[in-house]
Image 1 (tube, rainbow, N blue to C red):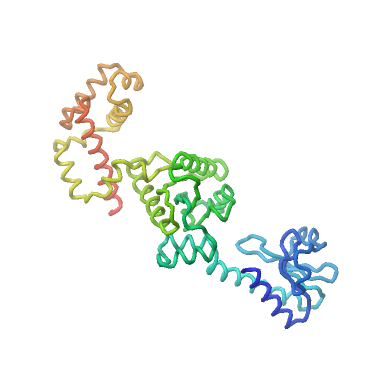
Image 2 (cartoon, rainbow, N blue to C red):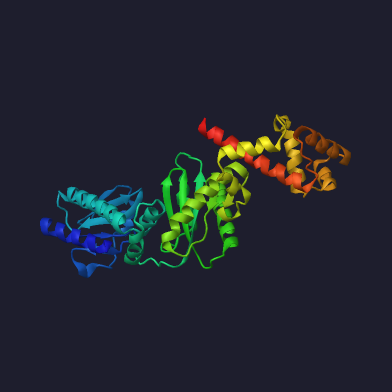
Length: 362
């Protein structure tokens, strides 16, 4: 479809200037020509054109204009003559090519279509018809991965991600802003969660090693209908939001593995405040310093095993018992007991949630 638009444009210009002209790629293959018999042929001057640093060149009675779109060489326009107005003709042709490409992408581009789905910029009833028009299979397994990075001058994370997933017919890399990239990944299986984790880790590691960019990735649920991609995207976004509160040290957060954090995130803050007031003695939680909280975290990681925890903390068993008893006196909870340990862990998560809300409102 896009080639037809370019061919029509070239034919219209030919009728005005009455000279042979066309468009070729960076290998010299003619994609569009006013003499359609030459389409597919290679221009023998391509090596000289590519060696030149100039945008406009004249070689052997032919004029050439390089056409760049988003800093990428898209086409080379040419006219088979040495008319003194060729530079103007080719500049006008180039402008029209850029405008046509923009129009085509707005109307037909697959990535733009996918972006409209996840951003709710298209009616649900139109999605199936549009997918058919773009020859996008409707019922295949896909998932949204939301990639958040820091804004760094002259470094574009989406370019790194695009390099990892070159199949533009199955995987779509969408730019939302300088810090946010979305990967819509096609999968072979409905429950390919392990593959998703591996893909996410590869993205994080590649951005870190090649671009020196720290990244976090939220993974949505796997969907089997193109209409549900918006749902997967929103879940990936929620995964990052919840993960930032409860698992800020993680670089990959899966919506399907948020556990109790997802439940707490959806509770009204008034209920959370009532819960904390009920659980902790007044001012008890505030008496716990960082060293004490680190001790508790290590104790939980070791499934309430006193011997293993004391070994990993390089302290005597009795010292750890003393610390745990001190926590009981401050909070009223004996975390050596399973039930109290669960209540304490949930309460800490609720406190984190409330603190994050206060920071946001501030």
